Amino acid sequence: SCTQLKRLNLCNCTKLSDNGLLHIAQHCHQLESLDVDFCSLITDKGLCYLAKGCPRLRHFSLDEVFDAKFVTSLGLRALVSSCPLTDLSLSSCMDVTDELLKDIAESCPDLERLWLGECGFLTDMGLSYLAESCWRLSELRLRSPSGITVQGLEDLIKRCVRLGTFDP
Image (cartoon, one colour):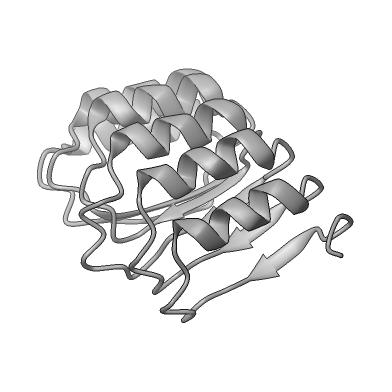
């Protein structure tokens, strides 16, 4: 039984699906850290299972899932609104928008580390949401932030004084 499990790394478990996440959510209520990088069978449904069954989840990583077209803002919103995340990595989720950053900022004020993927849909407004609520943010990584200006970055840095790592 894994009822006391706190950390689980399932990176490269390419057969992991929503059904596997359902079992984790049903049996691992103490889970604080979950890595599911390279697990391309996960969808919003699986994230919703985690949101309901893993209320202590503080670290979540869904990186390098280049065909993660079935992970959308719907599943991500469910996860961030239900879990006290301090470390979130979504380096390949294409559905990251300013509105999702608003939800992340409002739901995860203790966020310390945020890694985002190809974020061509982000603007200075998304950064302002983080700056308003996520004062503990110490690490932010973005890829291809085409809609973000120097002024937006300067505003973020002024408000998030703990920001030590910024990697655009």
